[in-house]
Amino acid sequence: MTHAQQSAGQCPAHQPPVDPSRPLPIFGPAFSANPHATYEQLRAQAPVAPVEFDRNQWGYLAVTYRAALYLLRNNPGRFHKDPHHWEALRRGQVPPDSPALMMMAPRDNALWKDGPEHLRLRGAITAALRKVDTHQLAHTVREIADQLIDAFASVGRADLVMQYCDPLPMLTVNSLYGSPPALSEEIVHTVTRLFLAGPDAAEANTALERACLALTRHKRAYPGRDVVSSLIAAGLTDDEMVPTLILLFGAAGPPPAKLIASGLRRILTDESFAGDVHTGVRPVTAALDEVLWNEPPVPNYCPLYANGVQEVEGVRLQPGFPILISFAAANADPSLTLGLPPEARTGNRGHLSFSAGAHACAAPDLARIICETGVERALDRLPDLALAVPSDQLPSLPGPFIAGPAALPVHFQRGTPHPTRSGRTAA
Image (cartoon, rainbow, N blue to C red; front, side, top):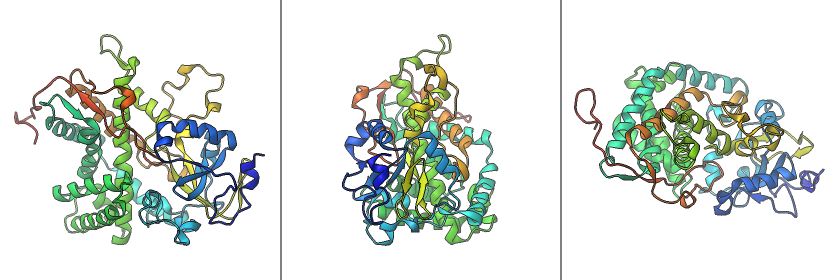
C-alpha cells in the first residue's frame, strides 16, 4: 500500500486527502502542456489518487481503466452523485468564481441524481433525443457548416476554433431545440463562457439560466416537434427544465466542439490521414476515434461522493471529497494494450470518453453525426487546408474539464460562398 493509500483516511473532510504530501494539481499551464505526464505519476501512486483539481480544492481522481469503470458502474448505495455531499462546498470554501464550481455545482437535473429521480429525468431526456431524425440532423449540420464557412471562405485564412468548431454544435443543437434566432445567439454565447470556465463564468451561469427559462416559456406557448417541447410534454416543471437544458447544452456544445477541433488538428498534423480517395485516405471516423482514445474533449469529470468511507482497489476514499473520473487517464492505461500490437485499437470503441453506466452520454450517436459531418464539411469546403503555425505552437485549453485546441489558425485556397439549392448563397 502506498503512502497515498495509507494516509487517505487520516484527515478532516476540509483538508487535502493526503498530508503532508501535496496532491498533484490537474489544472493550469504546466498540466495542460503535458497532462499524461501527470496521469502517469498519479497512476504510479494508486488506481484512485488524491489530486488538487482547482486552487485549494482537493479530491480524488480515478486514473486506471478498471477503477474508472468500476466507479461509473457502481455508484448506487456506496457513492452519491449529489454535490451537496461536497464538504468544502457545504463549508463555503469554494469561491463563487471557481471554474470547478461552474462544472460541479448542484443542479436539479439527471446528472446529479440517483435512484427514481434520476430514472425519471434521464428517461425524459433519452425519449426526447430518440425522436431526433438523424438524416435531418446531418442535413442541418451541413447547412450550418456552410453558413459558417461562407463567412470566411473568400479570405483564405481563419481560426477554425472560434469561427467554426465552437459555434457549429451549439447552432445545430439550438435548431434541434426549436430556439428562436435571437435566443439561440444568446445561448451560444453564454454556454461558451460558462463551460470553458472563463473569468465571468458566474455571470454567464445566471445569463444561461435566464435564457433557458425564456426558451422553456417560449416552447410552452409555441410547442413543436423538437427536443424542448418533448421534455415539456414529459411533465418537467420550469424548475426542472432550466437545469436540464443547461445539462443538454453543456453536453452538446463544448465537448463536440473540441472533438471537431481536435479531429481537424489530428488530420492536419498526422501524415497517416494525408491523401485522397485514390491514394487510400483514412476516414474521418478513424481520426475522431483516435481523439476519443488519446485526447478526449472531456478528460476529467463525473464526480462522485463516497457514502461513508469506501475502499476501491485498496484505496480508502473519504466522504466529503469529490471523486473525479479521468477518462483521459483511463483510456491511456497501459494495462489495456499490454502485449498488443499498435493497431489493436483500430476500430475499437471501448474507450470511456462517452462515460459508462447509468450516467453515460445519452446520445453518443447524435454526437458522432454532428462531429463527423462537421469535420467532413470543413475538409470538403476548404481546399489545401493546412495549419498556419507549427503544430507545437497551437495553444491548448488548461483543463481539467474541457480539453482541445484553444485556437486552430489555418490557411486554405480562397473560395466562393456555397450555393444553396435555390441558387442563392447561404445566409
